[in-house]
Image (cartoon, rainbow, N blue to C red):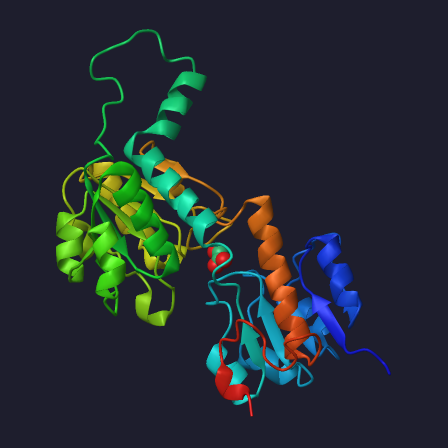
Length: 330
Ligand code: GLV
């Protein structure tokens, strides 16, 4: 029997590619070339499935041009690069990698929030530039993290994991806003309180964004929202760059109305808005929320499990573990 053909769009762990070869004829990308759209379309021809990352955009036009495609399996929890409705309309399974990256991403979010609040990267740049020549009582003074109010916009798995760090490790008061409220049993151990978005913006000392990005959440934080935030508050974004109007953010940081920002994600990444690069009070990381070796391996394995199951192999044949569009089944 000939094996179905699949594409592994970016370089991933060789062991994971080998697992896929047990079931599929695999075209991989050991050089990790980022293929422009036309080349991606060409590489997808005749493929039944693809293991993709956030750098591959899967939309209706692409699906129409690749009629053999039955499954697109993202190696990421966020899936704004996939038009899931377009997949469902064509009976293409779409999957992501929830759960396995929660704690690692929460670690990075918390670290970035602390780096922004305590001016860690700003201090390091100052030191490396040879500008540190004395102690002074107000050098790099900053807002406290412990005991302050942590605001979380988007209280899914990662939001809750950040809330645990803040409440249990740093004695922070936790406020959150989410479409739906958590069960009281989840709120109680953290002392977490659901508030409307305006209250969250007004009362948080350190606001962290962990909500999914879509057309509806585009620029969830713009000039009007930033104007509601406390003077001297910080904003951390580990979700998607498009959640924040970066020009408005740069203005708020420049004026000092916002003390600092911690950003792991950017609207035009890997390009970073020059207005942000020009500011000292921003801690910047290159979209590394889930980047621990163990977590990246778990994400690759889950994406591979999804692909294997979606194309009818393995113990979960026909039922990928993290299917985003179960309506395609049956
Ligand atoms: C990373 O940004 C992810 O969505 O997993």
